[in-house]
Length: 112
Image 1 (tube, rainbow, N blue to C red):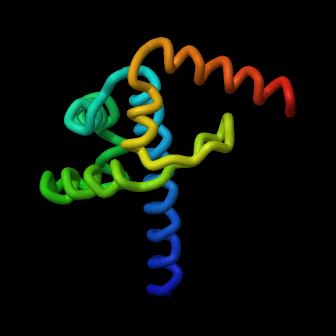
Image 2 (image 1 turned 90 degrees about the horizontal axis):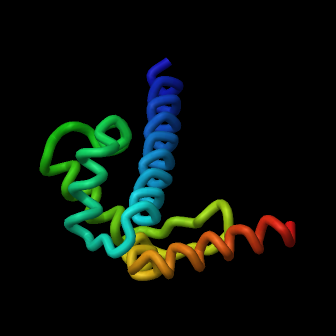
């Protein structure tokens, strides 16, 4: 019984992390020019439930988890492109870059 609970708990944690990754990407997209500190603070303030579900509520764990996430890979579901979050932040450096991203998403949806 314990192994089944552990499996369900791990699966739930994985789902929570995927949700956090999705909102972390969204934050960068909606806030062009974000750097690590902006992104970290924005996630904690604007997506607290996703942060807590994925990383817990102990501040040191949250900050360490977000630092690790910043260096981890995310695959954009709309384009299939994968980059580390800090690289996505560079890609979305300004509004023009975000506009190009949306044009790419549109082109990808047309070609599908």
